[in-house]
Length: 271
Image (cartoon, rainbow, N blue to C red; front, top):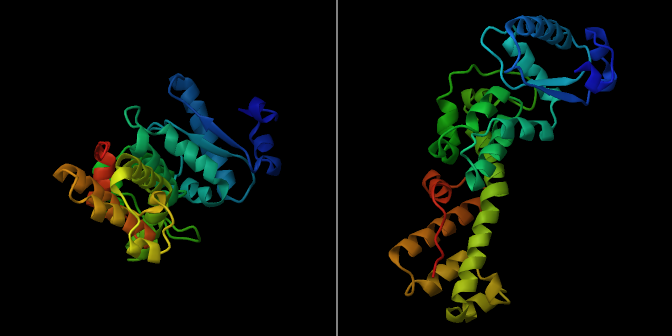
């Protein structure tokens, strides 16, 4: 690790202000017991010195074993200022299940970053959570057994929840869904327009609203004009898109059932 940072292999050399913006991701899954004991001693000293205010790099250890001796709460609190957004994304993606991809993977990672912030323990758990939990993260958060950590900004999500500041939790979830679900909804809207262009028209109501072309028609107008042509399943899929789009446009998280429908199955072409 010292070689990668270009420093001598001593703790004092690693605890250098010039390394404040650096980060190492460490994997311990293939080392022997004796080497693991040495890393345990190093981590204990490193965390103690960093907690005392000394400078140095951030360390992400991807596979800590229960016997590793590190003071948990102090190392968690140090992430508040030691982690950048890119570091949080790397951590979340590192813990994604290999079976998770597409929209569910995208939402899991962004939720971990926005909702969990520097609580890396929560982030690692959230990206592996069930689809139902990704669709309803407040309920997932309320079931966690980890202790909230109170302190300066950015606040720990469990501390926010413990203080009954649900609006702040909802705002974090909304930001994550706006980043991931909104582009998916827009892509589906454009697919509906392309499929049904010959059945769509700019009526006086849309013209009065300033809609200048068929491509600009919103989901509500599409649902109204296509109601006679869609099957029940297609109508329900379009309803889900309408509800999700309206929630995000009004700065609210998507209803959990609508979010779950977006995550659970790819929408068939509404034809």
